Image (cartoon, rainbow, N blue to C red):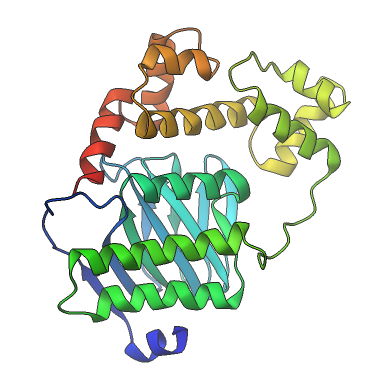
Length: 290
């Protein structure tokens, strides 16, 4: 299917399917196969509206760049980028560069849940087995090539893409993760298991069995952000999931994610995501119903 997509050639399609009587919670919005050469190309994850959605973009040739909450990535051929919006990230083409890729934009509660689990487990950039890339290409080709596509078919293509990503990251044939220092694995697991508790840098250094100063240097070098920024981002990601997947109050969510109160949570969420928690929830529910 990747070969067929390449034979189809560069193309972009915005799907205008309208609302359905019964909401579909994983829906394709647009798709394309593009190349960028020697031009300005830059997307800011906090300047694409307040309605949650996600981008799946696979690099075929050239190289793109991604700043994900302070962590830097080079997007090379064979790598797939998965991003949810709104979020503190930016991806772009370096001046004079070349980047060729295919992509899909998807919304809906189930799509966002799957993307969040994938990003939590492996980060925003993954290397997938060839059969999985072929399945992603097939979904993209369906979306840009089927002129009479129905809402159900568009949703099925979006589900197919998300299921392919799931298999590529969590399935039996997923590529092995890059080796991680044991101390870092301990710290990451400790953070994810204790987001409701105070997570001072000193306590994380103790988990890593390092001095505070050495831990901060090593963690920042390995992860790309400081320990405190990493903890905050993990908390905000969990807040996003709770807002979209439950009807819990912001007060209750604050208690589950280590914030002193709902007001503090709201300020931190608005500063990083650009919208209030309730506005994020409302936009997410609206998008899932389209």
